Image 1: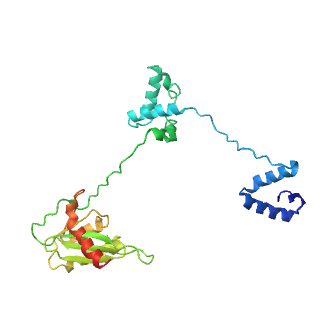
Image 2: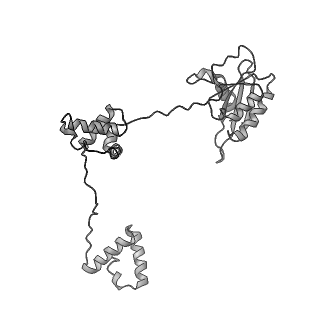
Amino acid sequence: MAARHYGRLGKRRKGIARRFLARLSGLSRAPLTRLMGQWLRCRQIAVRPPRRRRFPSRYTPPDIALFATLDAAQEGRSGPAPRRILEREYQWFANSAYVRLAPISVSHLYHPRRCRAYRSQRVVFDRTPTRQVGIAERRKPAPQGQPGYPRLATVRQGHGDSRPGRYHINAVDTVRQWQVVGCVETISERHLVPVLEAMPHQFPFRPRGFPGDNGAEFLNHRLARLLDKLLIEFTKSRPYRTTDNALVEGKNGAVVRKHIG
């Protein structure tokens, strides 16, 4: 409707009408100007489908499925090994199914591995590699009936009033159940180390060991140097052994979360 009166408008009004039509149709300036010029010439608009220039596919979906099966049998080796296998399958064993895969290059071998047909045939899951931290000794807590081996854990208070909550450092002695709770703004070394340095003085006995969990807030070199200076043994709990730190985890819910929040 607006395109009919477009030719009667001035230059300034044409610019205004072009911006209005661009917002209305969702097209950019170049295709909109081309369509309006087509209307002014022949009084009709013929929308052509977009022509996509694509290279012809060299490998068919059966080729990709065959390569995925071979790659799964070889457990995803690097490029030269499967490339040589594809070449031998066609040249030595006369397997016609590998006629298009035989001349593939090593550099091009990784392109089929990224396509959708390959990922639908073969899915690879890699486990997260374990990170070995050489701080503290990993062993079972054994206080031998003596006080001075507090178990430690971190309790997050949660968000409040659109602000991040504080962190509570909970320390519970294994034998006498003496409990000390500290509060820090963050669990970085800047806020955590001064609180951990002051917590041993709040126990009625001398701490002999520091069996903490596997949290990154405890396993740092600055804390290890501090405990070594105070002659306190530094250990950490074992993986997949929930009983190593079960005492302080129970106190986290029964004391810290119940009375502090």
